[in-house]
Amino acid sequence: VVSGSAAKDSPYTFDFHVLKDPETINAFALPGGQVSITLGLLRRLENEAALAGVLGHEVGHVIGRHSAEQMSKQQFASVLAGAAGVATSDPNDPRSGVRNAAIAAAAAQMITMKFGRDDELESDALGVRFIKSAGYDPAGMADLMTVLAQAGGARSQSEFFSTHPNPDNRLERIRQLVQEVGPGGEDGRARFQENVLRYVRQ
Image 1 (cartoon, rainbow, N blue to C red):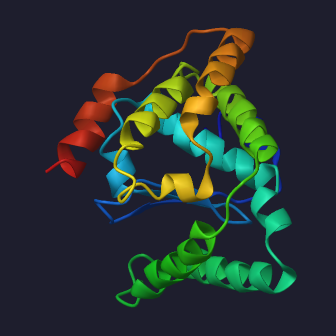
Image 2: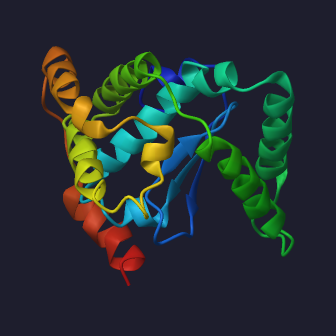
């Protein structure tokens, strides 16, 4: 999603993480390029295009500087410090638990932040473009919103709605965006089933 699109020309270094929380349904991005998706959301997806939708949308938040704009300078510095600890930690180091702790602390702050409608629409539009440029079917973004709308009934488990408006209200707009960029591209369903779902759904 990053290397195959205009996102690669941004000044940010993106780093992606799966948080080992099988219950919570969420994804978020920190200022600077740290992007996380929970195991609970990952398990609900069906193809690579939908995963690209998650990542593209969150990358859009980073490029749009939405998180930075909503945080106070003090909060921003605190989260950046945590993100820096994440980025510099060695996954082969037995002390790498520091990395997970930093992400968890940043996540706690992100849960209290709700993006406005304009921010969400901008991230949706950027995400659709990033998906298309990377060779995926941009309809994966609509697939993602459908999954999130279905998960909305389990409010106690879905933290996504704490930081993002209800996807029902954006689905039609996303379908329009897909038509604008043109349908087509792969959904990567077989690879996703083989390389991701067979492991995360065990």
